[in-house]
Length: 91
Image: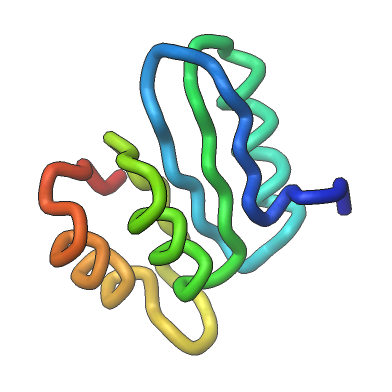
């Protein structure tokens, strides 16, 4: 795994996207794909706790969430994100 990937910030200027998946391969794939599109800042997390930290630190416009995650299900994570950041659009 690349150094600092879990905090996974790939910077640019268009939109800010949060990607959350407990499977590192899928997390890498989605984050790399979006970052290759250029123009977006991508934040990535492999669990709900880290995702909520990123939501509190950065204002993202879009969240791509894995639904089937251990500990906190993706739908529950969505509920928690909406409480903290009601303007974010889940996908």
